[in-house]
View 1 (tube, rainbow, N blue to C red):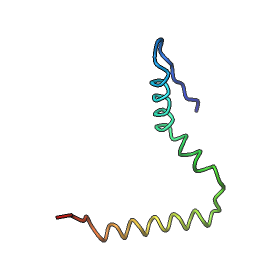
View 2: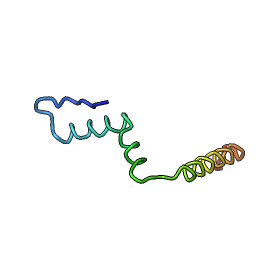
View 3: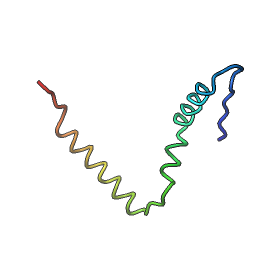
View 4: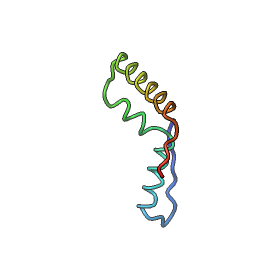
Amino acid sequence: MPLRMRVHDREPIGLALRRFKKLLERSGIQKELRKRKYYEKPCEARRRAELRKQSAIRKAKLGPTRKP
């Protein structure tokens, strides 16, 4: 999936760079690159997913906390 971005005439390079970064973020490419940077064993991925699931359950049990 190639990304295309057109830089307009007389557009400042900083503005074009900011638009490009937003485009990368929305496309999910940066997230995918970070995920693939290091190999993760399947057992480690399962363990991390299980911990994330348990954390969500624990947070749901606590409920919303209010500060007086």
